[in-house]
Length: 127
Image 1: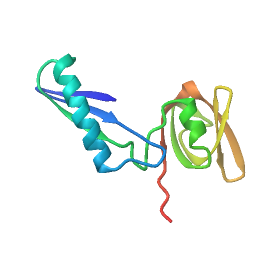
Image 2: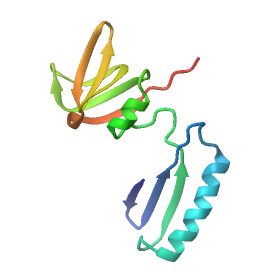
Image 3: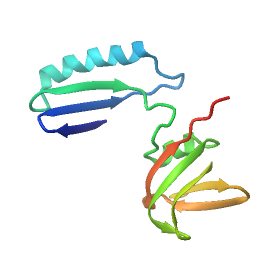
């Protein structure tokens, strides 16, 4: 969930996911349900636009559980500080070991401390 404010206009973005994927009808159903709840509860002052969507093919990974779930996918990482002189890495997500994310690039596996990962996204693969 993201709540973005730009001047007088606000956007509340809600991301939904399911094991078998998300379709437009799923987004519409959740949007209708949330609109009713938000209208009654009124947690956001002023006018805003509600957007409901799937995380997309290039979904962002936020938790260690998500890193584990996408084991085998190619990912892009941006670190909060340089590691071996670099902040950006791309490679095969091999999994999680404790509080570190294991990424293989070529023949080399690197363990990145989770708390140093600023941003991570799955790289879409089209076959």
